[in-house]
Each structure stands twice: as structure tokens, then as C-alpha cells.
Image (cartoon, rainbow over all chains, first blue to last red; front, side):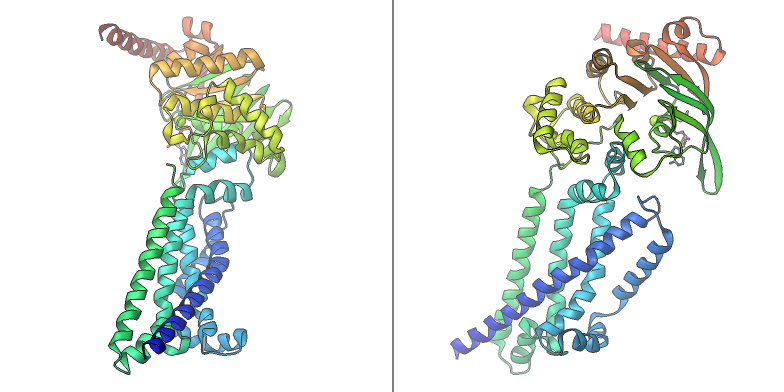
Length: 217
Length: 258
Ligand SMILES: Nc1ncnc2c1ncn2[C@@H]1O[C@H](COP(=O)(O)OP(=O)(O)O)[C@@H](O)[C@H]1O
Ligand SMILES: [Mg+2]
């Protein structure tokens, strides 16, 4: 009985880690370039282009205003096309990535905009081109704040993954609902919640530590 | 040599056009330490920022060594900027990079080899007397040290010109003196041409061989520092000199007392 419960929890934990890891990865892959484009094309940006900026802003705002649970349902067909099924952890990665990408874009945008404009201008005055300014100045100067943003992203995705779990995504959220709630297994419910709390705690602490390590201001 | 001819620059502020530079004409010769002095808001920063096209002038010509730079872009513009090191009032160093990395930055973006960069950075650290601060971050340095890092960074690519926008305005008088001394020695040793913005007459007196007075976007008078300070023609410049010498006397007095 105990062994069985432990194995249930363990495999749910693995599913959660799997969803969070890959969703974070994809969210960065999509959100990162969007964030950079937002910053470069904004008013006074290095590649100012207000039309493109406005369009991208609208897309991001629209995506962010859809409640996640609805987004999952809307994206059922897309999940089926991409991963062949609309249930299970792999299928959940599709809506999770898509929900988190605009969030990552905003995090990148905010962090890069915090970089002192005068430092960027100094780099321009030294003859740096736009990619050099993005990669060697903006991202480097914003690194502590980017790490904090990434921490926030991971924790958010964890929360969303529990929601995705509830409608067939597997993982700890799914376990808590199916066993803890529907079958009155309070012990499993409690253990699941403790694991989630620990997960958040560990990620937050690691994030804070790394963020501080790279902050030389 | 830099020729500025009929230069105009305006900014748009809430739909209103505001003319900040009005028909500026100047000649900056090789080896000059050329001071541009005037009250706050006169257009000094805007003028110096036009020289490396951080601001694009609306009208007029800036001819640097025979080339009109006002329409440069892309690689040609970046090459111009690499020939004009700029230093700033607030130093504007990369906060999350060491002193070494800050000075290496212009070399790295120009694609030099690691060995060459290392050699050049060590040379520059020696020149600005900061060898022991190589691995420090800017936040660990004093204002004067930060400005010396910025000077080393501006010199890294061996530019012909240095643009200095109030580089000593955030520094105390003693540090100001040492930074000005460094700039002067660079001018002597390497024939560096320095264009220097300031609102302090002391700075002009200390190192500039030429000076231009700017007020409300217009050059009032310019020429040899000695001639201009001793025989100003316009009432405005006379007034400015009088006011600043009063200020200097007062500061001197205070210094003597304390
Ligand atoms: N980017 C800008 N946009 C709008 N107005 C500006 C801008 N830069 C400078 N100005 C205005 O131009 C005038 C001259 O500024 P500036 O060249 O910085 O003067 P100074 O360096 O002599 O103090 C000021 O009135 C300032 O408000
Ligand atoms: Mg200024």
C-alpha cells in the first residue's frame, strides 16, 4: 500500500518535472526572440518599428488574456496535430508552452528595459552593432533580472501544469485531484502539496542565489 | 580635422518643433583640445552627439577628415565611431563586467584575437594606472577610477578623436584635475584631438587651447582660449567670464578657509 502510493507519487513527480522542464524550454525558445523584438522595435529602440511593435503587443496581450483552462481546450486540436494526442503530459506541453511564451516575452522585455540607456548608448558610441548590443550589453547587464524572471516563469508553469493535469495532463496536480480529492486519499493529497511547496521553495531559492551571484552593481 | 558648417538640430517635443542648434560653424584642428562651454540647456551635449551621429542633424555638414559624415550609416558609421572614443559624465561602464572586460569590449566587438586584446588591455591599464583593479567591478571603484576605465575603453581602438561630454562634472576638484591631466598627456603623447564639453570655466582654463561659447543653440564666439578669455568681444561672453571667475574666486576662498 505504501510502496504503491510512493510509486504513484514518484511517477507523478516525474511527469510534472517533464512538463515543467520542456514547457519552460519551449517558452524560452518562443518568448525570448519575441521579447528582444519588442525591445528593439519600441519607440526609441535600436530598430524602431512601431507597426511591428504594436502587432506583437496585441498578439501577446490577446494570448495572455485567455484563461489557461480555456486555452488548453482551444489547443486540443493543435496538441493532437503536434504530438498525436490531446491527453497526457506530452500533450500538455503544447498549451503550457504557448501560455508561457508571451509571459516570457514580457519578462525579457521588462528586464532589458531596466538596463541603463546610457550604458547602451556608450556601446553604440564605441561602434557596436545591434546584435552585439543585444548579446554583449543588454542581456549581460540584465542577467540578474532575467534569472529572477526565469524563476518566476518556472513557478508559474508549475502552477499551470497542475491545472493541465486536472484535465488529463498527468503529474502531481492530476494525482492530487484523482486520489486526494475524488478517492479521499488525504495522505496523498498532503504529500503532493508538500512536494509542490518544496519545489517552489527550491526553485525560488536557487533563482535568488543565482540572480545575486551575477549582480555586480 | 573636423569642419562643422551650418549645423541645425531640432527636437520634437509634444508636436512642437524646438530648435536646439542654430547655424553652428566651427573648425577643430588636429591636436586641438577644443572646449565647448555654455550654460545648462545651451545645446552642448546635442552638438557633441552630432559628431558621432548619436544625434542626426537636420541640416548642415560635419566634415571629418574630408568626409561628410552626416549621411553615414551601417559599417561606415560604426567605423567612424570607432575613430571617436567618447566619455561621459556618468562613465556609463558595463556594470556586470570587470574593468578588464570593459576595456576589452571595443576590441572584442571589432573581432581582435584574444592575445591581441590581452596585450592591448594590459597596455591601457598601465596607461591609466589601474593595473591592480583589473578584476574589479565598476561598483567597487571611485568616480575618478571609473572615469579612467572609461578613458581606457575609449582609447582601446586607437581613435584619432576623443569626445568628452562633461567627463569631470561628477568628480571632485582634485580628481577633476587628475583626469584633465591624463587627457592633456594623451593629447601631448599621441596627438589625440579632444573635443570637450563643459559648463566649468576652470576646465577650459586648465587644458583647452581653443574654446567656443555656446548659448541657446548658437555659437557666440570661438577662438584661442587665451585671446577669448582676455579679450572677449560680445557682452554675453564677458558676462559669462565675469560670473564664472566670481564663482571660482568664491570656491578658492572657501578652500583657503577650510
Ligand atoms: N532627445 C531629446 N528630445 C527632446 N529634447 C531634447 C533632447 N535632447 C536634448 N533636448 C533639449 O535640447 C536642449 C539642449 O540640451 P543639451 O544639448 O543636453 O544641453 P546641454 O548639454 O548644453 O545642457 C535642452 O532644452 C533639452 O531639453
Ligand atoms: Mg549636457
